[in-house]
Amino acid sequence: MAEKEKKDRHKYYDMYARDKEVAKFYNSIEWKKLKQKALIRDKGLCQECLSNQKISMATEVDHIIPIRVRWDLRLRLDNLRSLCHKCHMRKTTEDKKRYGL
Image (cartoon, rainbow, N blue to C red; front, side):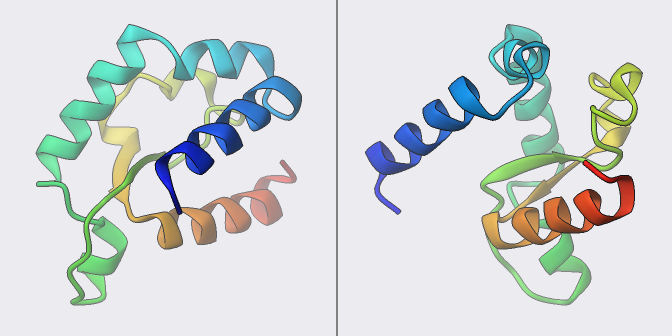
């Protein structure tokens, strides 16, 4: 996916679909710093792929327990893991089913 297309998709999601408080959080300096710490800790690798003995670059950082379920864990490094886009989308789908999001 082209970078501009990706940015447009995120902008649309933030404007029309994402909870405003959540959107504010994901645009915060605190989140951006913590996201970088998670990527560094995980050496930029998708942790799900790694657990399946595959190597792929992480493009996203996931909240293991979603912030809409446990807002208090949103800034906990131990509630984050680096994932590739494919694994993140799969995890998000599972979270929606599990938590009714």
